[in-house]
Image (cartoon, rainbow, N blue to C red; front, side, top):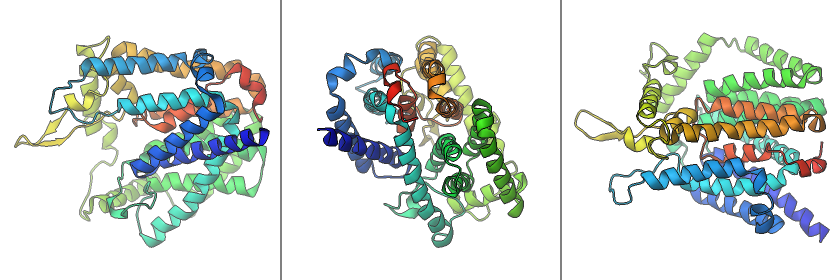
Length: 409
């Protein structure tokens, strides 16, 4: 019986890690769905429904409230008879499905180290294959999020940002591993992750990776200082070796855009234009604030930003239906103050749980707090509210008191 339980736990660790990675890569939906269902079935067999729903609701009630607000907002605002309704983003079915995964995973959080470690190892192996193939075989000017299961030329470039951000989320645990076992393999994994983040040319991911080092050094204190010093020194040496400057980084980013757009004549006067309110993203921010002013309390309906901000050309043809690239502002637009407060409370809830157990968790608390901090910062530049990496990270950092003694710390 013990061996069966042990094997199930091993399978859960493997499939949760695999599902997390597949959700970040350009993977067929069917494969993602099958992996998700396997995770859910294994967790269900391991814990059962009664223990999860009735005995543990106090451990996830803020997530239940937020999910209920999302569902209610969707049902009130959705026009079931309209022929013009688009597939909404975020998608309510994703939020419901990932909430179910979260309430099971909260009961498995004592395996946080095993899940993180397995994810880091699997991601490292994948990058050791993916980076050389991109650079040498495809001669690509950027690292995409392809899982090599479809035509490379049809890959969505937008997912490279999610890949870069995900790697930045894993960096705090990589630094923790390096501190715990100061060896060459853990050192190489960190350098590999930084190279991959740089190769995506995602400024958001690059910014988060720098923040991860700073946060781990501040929260971890002198125990992490030696590791941070080695990492920073190595990165500076690489920058000097390859003569990387902000100007060269911007030029490399432009070159990558030329390849993506298949336009060798593409030029831009200001590669940082996306940070201004004159950019498309800036206009989406203004639209979200305008919609919030119109319905400040309950918002315009979950997933409704795309339907209410359709963009047409001069002939009246539909061009695109954008997202905000900012989850806080999108929630403000769609769910109003009620939704935004309930969403922010998710971070405060996890933060309070970790701080309460900081002494017992010791150096691991710095990893969890940094990951929550990075997730919160990233949501200002990317939409993750219906993405597995948001719900899985929040589940694994929502500490339960009665599971503390099981932590492999």
